Amino acid sequence: MSKPSPDVYEEGRGMDAHNSVMREIRGLKEKHYDPHEPTRVWLDEDNTPGGVYDSLTIILNTGGCRWARAGGCTMCGYVAESVEGGSVAHDALMDQIEVCLEHEADNADEPADLIKIYTSGSFLDEREVGAETRQAIAETFGDRERIVVESLPDFVDHEKITDFTDHGLDVDIAVGLETATDRVRHDCVNKYFDFADFEDACETAQDAGAGIKAYLLMKPPFLSESEARDDMVDSVQRCAAVDGCHTVSMNPCNVQQYTMVNELFRAGGYRPPWLWSVADVLERTADVDAIVVSDPVGHGSDRGPHNCGECDDRVQKAIKDFDLRQDPSVFEQVSCDCERTWELVIEEETSYAMSLTR
Ligand code: SF4
Ligand SMILES: [Zn+2]
Image (cartoon, rainbow, N blue to C red; front, side):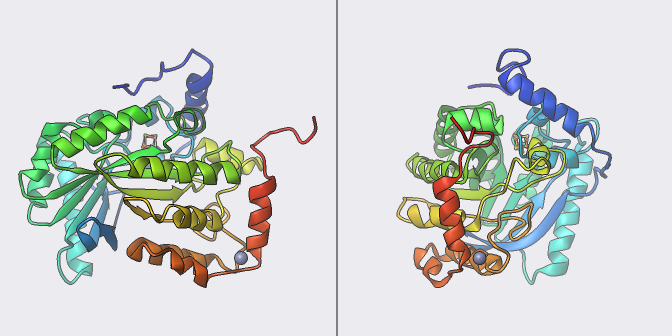
């Protein structure tokens, strides 16, 4: 399998050039974070192969993704939220879990059946979360029904998964695949691995009794609206066809601070996707053999996926309905004049910096 490495392409070109620009942008960050506090925690509900569950979502602060430190992905601002120095000790990580349990006890009637743990990196990377912490977290949540942990494909292996399945938990690994198209993943997202690595991770997870939840990114930079839409339709279909991948979470890109996407956005070179594009992909892929969901973070704002400003909340609500019911007819109930603008954009927009004249 490929390894996170800044040496993937020739020095000064391709991925190497992407990385050096992003290291520079991220060097601008000034905030500092407490290693005893999670980055974020919230309660929600989620559609899983076992049904709709109340969920507790935890963003652990683990020191950050090692790929991000090499430069990282063009849209990812998470590393700007991580702890200085690159690692967080076992006790501090367990303090973060404690804060999350207190948040749940204060705000929920009963413990959530579903726990979701993200790390702004890879929970299964032992440089972020060591075996001792992983096992302690598995034990802490061993009485719940289901757990989702985030990881890049490289770190998915049998023993790490069985730490959780041994407690009787249903396990899903959330993999930030972003797109099934290797060229788009490498050149627009600056992510180093291949679709084949994702397929291998699905096989490993399935052998260990776990499932895979693929995270896709709609409209990385350098794609037109129609290219982004078509790439997502194809990616949802290809992911759903892989054994072991039971859920696809297709999420529109938003503009985060300290990222290349932010620099492009400020220079007028990037617009987050239309919510109509999100709805379009969900409608076109409603027949695939997987749960397909989307969570348009920052919807309705300039930096998030948006339509005209009038209909954003209604379309967002239809998307959330679709997430829970998987019924594409929810989109028949929303319309707005701006759909015609979106159709024109789909037909006419070309890739960033493409010449208007021959
Ligand atoms: S998107 Fe994931 S792999 Fe890429 S830099 Fe961010 S945390 Fe790392
Ligand atoms: Zn509208």
